[in-house]
Amino acid sequence: MLGDDLWTFEIEEGAFDSSLLPPDSRTPNTPEYHQAVRGFLERNLATAAGWFQVTVEDNKVRATWKSSASAPRPIDEIIKMLSDGRYAEAIQLLRMLLPSRPTDPVIHFNLGMALSDVGDFAGAGQHLATAVELDPELTNARVALGVCSAREGNWEDAAHHLQFAIEQEPTNGYALRNLGACFTQLNRLNEAENCFRQSVVALPQDQRCWLGLGDVLDRLGRGQEADVAYRAAIDVNPFNDLSEMARAARRKIAEQTLHMSGHERLREDAVAGCVAALQRFSTMSPEQVRAVAFEIAALGTKGINPYGPEARYRLRTLDGEFTGMPALCLMYVGLQQTAPEMDMQFDLAEEYTRAKQLFEQVRTRQ
Image (cartoon, rainbow, N blue to C red; front, side, top):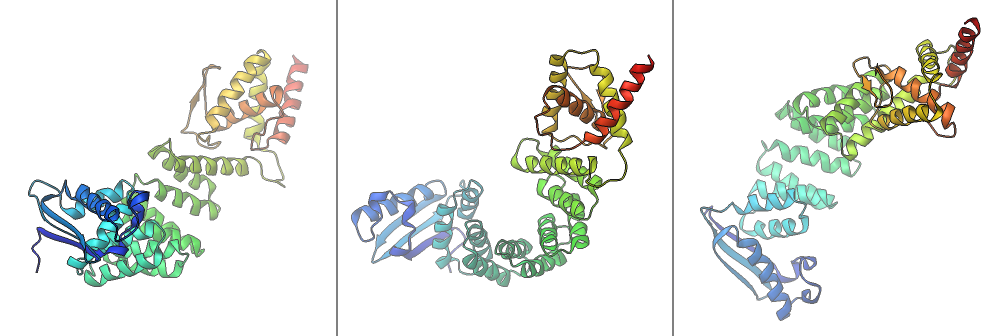
């Protein structure tokens, strides 16, 4: 048996991924092909091998080397490639390692993960299942099997794998998060909520956990709780695509909460907010009013919770400190006065109309 420090790559010549080679060196059994394959392997071995030998002959691509005591293990270098998004290179090297390490669950696990990430779900499933057979305690391989099934839309199979993983490791945040997503797809929302709540405890800095929790709570009709979860997702990292998804969800909740079609009475807090806005703007020029409205609109792209008393906003264009509903009323009234053509994504028309009546009544008495 090969020692732990002696490694061998070997595959059929035509099985090498020619996309990794220069365009003019992709024809097997040519000098250019042999030179390009050797160059690829030598570049990847240079940082991990104390000694290595590469041959391309007899329709075989073969590389043998001994690890250097001061260099990373080959599998560590390949995992780094995967984390850097260099999937094609990593997959090729993992496939070439298998002949000398056919019973190594770590190689099967990483190859299965990589194939799943590039969309080869059949190949991924085979290698991940092999990893689990070789090491039944490899919980992350079970999680990866679940993710692979979910990517294919096989939600029941995915849930089965993930539930098994959680039985092995109850606090595995990734298993809990993905099982929550499966339950959401299966419309098992109470179970999904339970999974996501556990996942945010295990992975408090994972935006997808918070987003999943927010989505489930929103679907359960608990908008204010969902808004808290979305805000937590934004707090983790305000400047990526996931935070934009959370902001869009918060805006939708705010719109639905502010003014639902067919409601039987006006929202008195919105009426009061509009009256206060009319009073403030009565002594300001249209340009000043517009500046205030546009500043709040810019804040609104990050999400303003109309019912979040803990959130307070300070403006450059107006003195004072404002909670969510008063700020939104300032924006609504200001835009109605200076830019009524703008789509504000929520409707306070009836509350604004009532506020104008009240404001005129007060001015008439003065």
